[in-house]
Image (cartoon, rainbow, N blue to C red; front, side, top):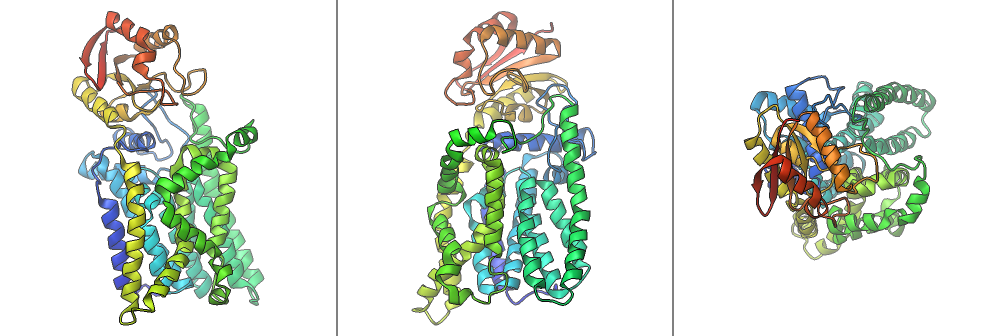
Length: 519
């Protein structure tokens, strides 16, 4: 494998620079955007690695009381690297975003090299540029989440695996397998990369004399590197079932009881998917490019005949469709899982971009390569601006402010109870730098996201007070899961009880904070 700088260095450098500019913007924004809930949990795990235990097999959150609060989670690549940065530079939430950005840039570079090897430099420029500027990728690559690590690692692993298939350099097989394994461990949607890997192997080895021997070697390698994946996720399930609050991340899968009927009642969550695609993940211009790119091998058959790995992106898209069929409720409710779709979507969208660029370039013969690149940048930038703004809206700003005030008012060992914008969002606990509970606490019996009656709420409050809770704080915009029932209105009786039994420390148009007395 030739690791010397390729001839396409100028275009690669420009594309990665564009990706960096988009991803580094507002890097220091607090974790207050649409994904604040998931970001806060990821950030808490980084905190707990740094402050309590470096054992990566025991990821721990801080929103279920004094702990230990180990949970069944994906392998903590992003949070662990961030914790290492904390140990060197001190605590700052922007470090988690920076780690995600670095993974995102690696993914853009790796996709360029993959496409350059299988389809040529034009497709490499177009596909990498789409990934660099695709709204969903830009947004999620600067979130404190595990998804950017997952995507970049599986793209890198696929690239090196293809190089191995084409060059027969044996050392690349275990390296690519290890990177692919780490990507899947970082988050399970990375499993979709298995489909293009199998397709690439079958395509490359077809008709070769040593095909049977090579396929046997690949099968053995696949089994060996699948063992850590099976072992880790088995451990994660065990961990989630062993320690309070008995939580295993994810849910809403097809094998769960009643899932099929629920999928049917919700219209297979297609409306939720359409909203995500239309408003922020792709936006309409890029969605059109993807659709055109999917049809391109059929509409422009002559241009695609004989192209190596002709259907690689389509196979990967098919695997993503299968993933959606299995876990549509989880994906619809936690749309950051869509990030794995960004790579194959960028690959097929490259066809759509090149069709437009070729048509325009015919009238501008002097420098068609420059025209093509500039035109692609203009098209994708125009498509991406609105989608990025939608997600980065600081909707959980009051929760961040609540946590910051609790950090100033409370002692380091105090336990807090909080309620923020979205039911169950632990963002206020994270910014308080304390441990505590969301309210009602996770695992409380009853329908998820529905506030209980005041009598039950008071009983829960007193139980948490006995467990050591010393602060009760909510934002004035805190609501149930529907977002329609405000906490301060529904629980007027609970707040009246607190007025009698606790000291009101702060009450303004955004926050309400009580200091609880010892039981």
